Length: 280
Image (cartoon, rainbow, N blue to C red; front, side, top):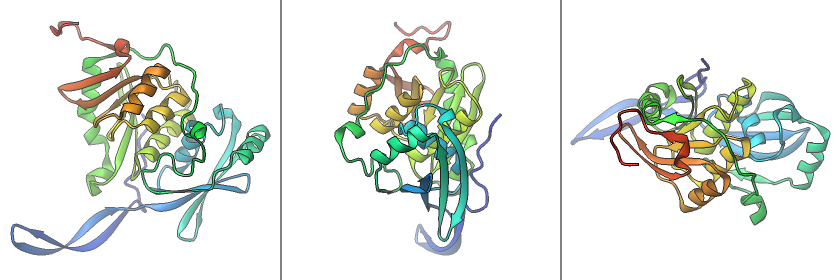
């Protein structure tokens, strides 16, 4: 079972605060999630800077590179090195030459705010990519979906400390949650999860992603780009995300709670549990 490294040293700061509650003022120490500039560098060429939680950054770099279409296959990433760079962190990636030359042509100079999914995109074609429709994918029971939702809260150590980070979980039918990644940015959490699964050699067609955030367009696009065909989110979707899910064959579920959910696209991958009396 793969666990997240979040909650490790460097991800939380202790801040002295004045806490006011019901007319009483108390001096206390609060646990606050860290965020640092993370510079992505491909073959000595800076690509962009994102604000992220300083953990699981190898996963983040691999997931970002794949989900943004900078490479087509994991084997096109030859190496990842993380190193301090003053107040920031630099992640240096080596990719095959063909991908590097293409990356130079489409290079984006972006400074990514926390939670920014399309920062620095220069054209509509870059923002809304053409993706091949997905077929196959997992068969997930309602019971399995709701069991993962119920279990997710206990698998978020950084959020338990700070209450301010998103999580993305990888769930395999008949197994449950296998991997969780957390970050101050929801896109970063998803990229970290994708990278973790790719680096572990997981079959991305064999499971599904569970998000604590809303199901925005970029989240669906990242999943579709790497072959993940089932996405469930605890919060709401956007209309553009729903349209993209329907176009790309992604099963999209939102407002997912322990006893409820709403299916917005491709319900065929979610099967009813035996004995469920709900109308079909």
